[in-house]
Length: 107
Length: 156
Length: 272
Image (tube, rainbow over all chains, first blue to last red):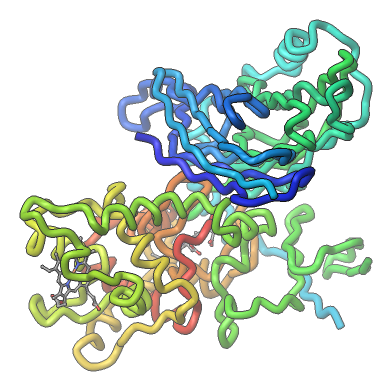
């Protein structure tokens, strides 16, 4: 199972633009590496889609290719308007999904 | 009060050593020989539906010299009010010198507040990284950033 | 903006403070930078030889990918072994119990009459106190426990005992460090003592310190053990590498740790 970390603020004022940072363990095997001993190509296995939602609505997403570094890091912005819940979803090519939630209170 | 030390490297004693390291490193990289700017151009055409790109608005930050091509920090920002009728829809990052030029695409919404994003990418060699921004009105902007990638990896 | 004239008479302009630039075959280093705790009596952590971008990744507790292993180690701490016990059963307050552990290893071990590395100590705990099997030095579980234990001592100065019963082992490690080896006939000291700050192909040589281990290496794209690094450095000069956990490497580790005495624990450091 991939392990994810998210740094998102818990509190914000309406109109604040906040930065969210995410990190997940994944080899991001590009399919371009060879096994040093056998010479065989190591099969490609990557996370290909990252989605960030707020109250169920996607506000940021990203397509990833084999050139995203192992243990992918991604940061992006969000404009706070009301209280609610973030959901961050990593989709891997083999269909495995990792998700993480976090609450935001807007004063 | 800046004190400076300027060293002229005597490489003689290192030439052999680096040769050994280099061989090991090159073995680890699959050939980048099939990387062509044409491939990148094709990909860009696909992403933009052939729309003409204007220089400007988009800024891609990369280290001038990347210490290791495996993990190069990259940051983009696009000038835009990010309102419901004027925002950045997508940013695509393309590495002209990678065997597969696609790096990643970001999709923004007015809820993003700012068209900013950062990640870390693999760059096979010294090259140009192209950023393409697609706006909500269909306009396309682009930027090109040169990055020098050192073949890191000595010392095991 | 500064103009610097090198010995070869090339003129260089606009040198950023604290960074190492390469122009042709020259390395220019600006030494005015105050490295704070990363420099002790002229000994400098590998941190000071990295680029600003790499240092920024290490410094940000969130962006530092090694922290994923630290978190995993924290979770493993209370995971029960085959006999139902976990590390937490006996070390209930790891933040306190494990503080100062990383800076003090390798230690002299009365039971075997030799030095013991921290990985070997963790393995002893896993096997004898929890009924688990021993882990390889670079297994996910070992690296997680090691980065977690190391991170607890972050900022504490490295401080190994080299006198008393440790003395003969220290001497062996020291001899290893200064022994030329491999087809390239180079000792650790030829690179890391004689030439830090200089370029070796595309790398800036550091002093080869181990205060940041396990370090997350951009090249490895994961954390790795001290012994993995030693193996790499031995292979680079085409010398026979020893096994992780071999007496040779544990003794060498003792010497290298002393070599960087006083430098702060940076686990998990980020290196290129």
